[in-house]
Image (cartoon, rainbow, N blue to C red; front, side):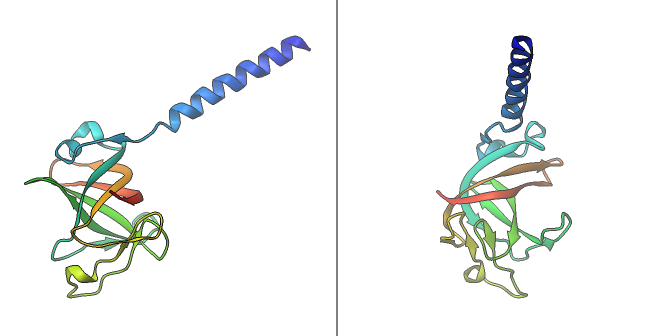
Length: 144
């Protein structure tokens, strides 16, 4: 009986350690350093300013309808943000044709509104395929 208890405790400790490793906290990454192969498929936190280009690409490749905005910093620091379209936290409103910056409505995780030019913090998984394709799939958006 004692051997069984010790064995179960050891198995529980190994499983707990494995789960903790899988749930490692996202790493804070500077925008200037975000688009490197080392960050591909990595959970990251980026901080910067919300921006939108003159055209915004939207798709549902993963079963969730998402649109691509940007997070910017200093000169040349721009990373795409793939944001789910919806009405809850960490989502955005769908954009129609001919939109302006005033039409971009993003919601932080707590539901508070964020617009173009406002500071934000984005948590999600980076996708990097060279310098030309670099974006984070937003799991969480917060006001910075």
